[in-house]
Image (cartoon, rainbow, N blue to C red):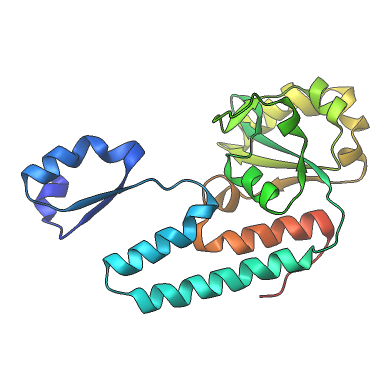
Length: 216
């Protein structure tokens, strides 16, 4: 009702969340577009679409050119570098899981051609963004780097990490722990799609993994 009262010229929404409003919007003669927007590969198509929708094609073109140039700089920075093994953990107040390549941070790891050890344990064509992942399995995989994406209150996350991972003596024997390569990633760049900040997020991963600073 609040949306209809605004009498917008166009309503944008997500197919996965807002399709229930489509009939009501049509009944009130309000145009709407529902978007399937998920991974970082959708960023350029979405910017292009929004430029066309709002009659700002030239501005959208400029934005995508800058975005592409920055993404190329990230890839060029690690050209010829060996691929480290990575585990991307998702820590919440409920526990610790591992990200699959369909999740945001792990999709960036894949884009940078780093080896996600979690992929070895996935069912074929899985669509789950996270999967159960024990310290025992992490010990067997023993990745070079552990990235941790957090969601929730810090105290609850710390408690979950201690219960599932860090309080176990096996944690201290991991190569990533011994080499100080356990890295907590900021949720604003890695929990959800960072959009136009994707090059900056990927540059952060390059810096943490290779100690290389990408200049834009």
